[in-house]
Length: 274
Image 1: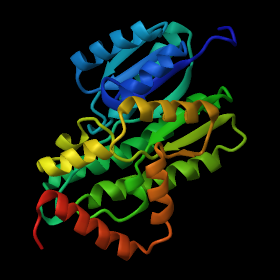
Image 2 (image 1 turned 30 degrees about the vertical axis):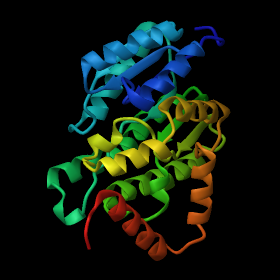
Image 3 (image 1 turned 180 degrees about the vertical axis):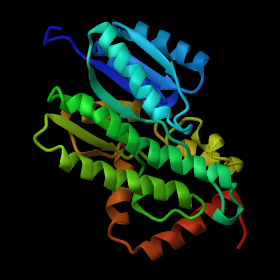
């Protein structure tokens, strides 16, 4: 393979939302793509959009990363594609994730376990399996999708916020471990995004959804910030000036105070009672 040829970009949750927007931007930069997601029809539609945007080729792999050994099976399939196409893996985007809203004591056990498995175990396992494909070449970029929710306690999103705290520390530690390897690791920490996240997380309050839409950024804007940071090899990116200000001042306040403020805010937006 010629050194000027770009390697595959693997994007989990790549069929729709933020994942698809990042895929389209990489497609416009002539990266071949491997899109991973649960729904075949969504992946097929996303693949067509990426081809229209300029991707030289797009492969799709249907995979639910919550399932046992799913990441291992995905690694085998991706390795086979790379060998067959004589095109190495160059970019890994760990975008797949889910949220869960509500008091912890009222959350479904299986839903909570699935979120923790996808947001934490799967992400860590994806890095364990795929990063060696990059370090073996001495070249590559990794993007892990966290959230500004990972920097503070999040009442009614307690489990979700905690999983994103893991992504924060894990990603920055992995970046330090890979220093000098030729592989960069970037942490993306967005705020509200105008996607289907709220509905999927179980938020029924229209007042909350309207607030999140008004305050949110489009998936395209977040993706542009993410891809720029990824390709530049930056350590961390928080898209949106308001989100960066919130993260800055949040770091100055005590966790106890932040938890109280967040509890009152969420209760006001969802109509929850003391």
